[in-house]
Image (cartoon, rainbow, N blue to C red; front, side, top):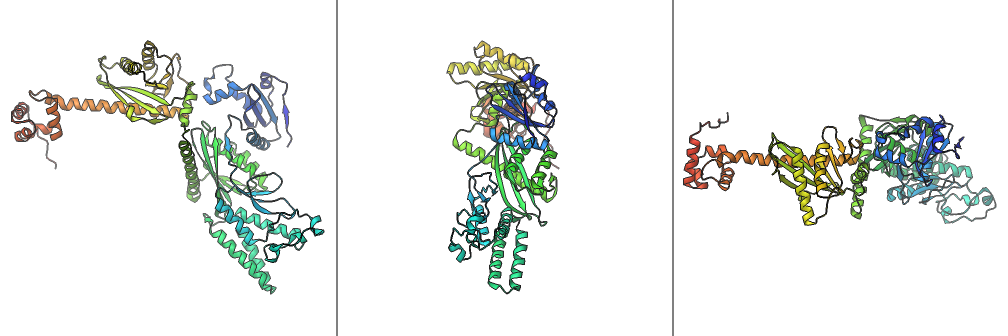
Length: 626
């Protein structure tokens, strides 16, 4: 790979002016010289300059996370490569090495074991948790230790693999430095230590071991079956019996693997699930039509990134360390650099591969199963965090970033005004703590000082009543106040907070029409990404406040309409009106009840007055059902 680094002594502006048009990798560094982002490009010039297109002007065209990245860039280091594939490999290696702050980071779990076939003249096969790039072949990691141990036992039952730790080389074997052990005599080893078996024969056996560990058992079955037949024809019945026993052990191993395709397919099915800044990825390995294993991964720093980009990051890191590249990849969405990734994997495999995004059929169902596994893995991660007691929903963290707040908005209080044609004006206040509604602290307000449909004045009344009371009670204030509405509602609420000397409490307005977020002292709405979980949290809070206000308004309005006519009757107060409505269901029910029935509720005198009142109106009894 022909790589060279450019521009060590140039300033940032000079580097931007002299960017090459060749493919390569760019590394953004902060003022301390720390790498904060690594990316690849087909043309370094066009890709890198995109980040700085608004650097000298307004940054509002950038998402907050990207804006934060660009604001921290103090230097750029470029690595020019001969091809996009080389850039892809280098990018994956640099991200793995430096774990930059703004890249998608794959969280490795070093506790998972591997089965290794060592790079020796007479290889050993054993379990390890250390991956050393010395030419050895690694299979795993195994997330299920029982599956790993069963696979290891199977290959040791089928094949005569040496269990010693001797340093067997052609020289030591020829000099017979080591003596045959018990394994040779009980037919567990073929004795490579004394040269009983050749290096070529032993290597051919190890290749079969690798095939089994990869899940490709059909070819090994055919080979053992042919071996057994030849031994039988040669009248070597004892050796043919051992071949038969190996076939039976291999059959048991194969039966424990779930068959998903009768066509002996070889593919990896990969899916991810993301929520906020976290994601989980799952890889199902299908070999010879059977699921031979699955691997789980956690990723961070994914918010705002397309699913195809996160998926590509997982694939880069996964196949960077895995030599087992199948002939087919099944994915849920296209990759951002699909052609480049495909060329890289074909070079790694040494044969063509296909990338498929199925929409229907059995493959789509299997892809859906992998997706559900990823979602379950993500839920499990959140539960673990909640059990530790240090879980703060990412939507809260994202909201702090989007609104540039000094503190996490863990407690949010949101207000909404509701009235219909100016009548029964009410307000609601809902409370969310750590992105969850806290209904025991919801509050309802009847508007007292405002006549007519004046939402601005109504908002001022409610804000004043709520926070004057908190001041008097010396109660804690929310981390964020939110009003349902745009600049007008926000300005009205701000006037009250300033009068109460509470201007330091963060407050925003969320306008319904375009979901625009307004902050104090800004004429334009804040640029909050539509995909941000912070914005989705604001929308959920606003919608809950609206629902609560509408519900309260309807209750008041219904009560007023139902009780107005009964209240006009002399001798019927609120208490008796309520009893009558509970007994007969509605004013109409009271109207058509008999005098005796009404008397049972309110007494004879009041019952006479009620019947006299309704007798003066034209009576239209309800139609009987047809």
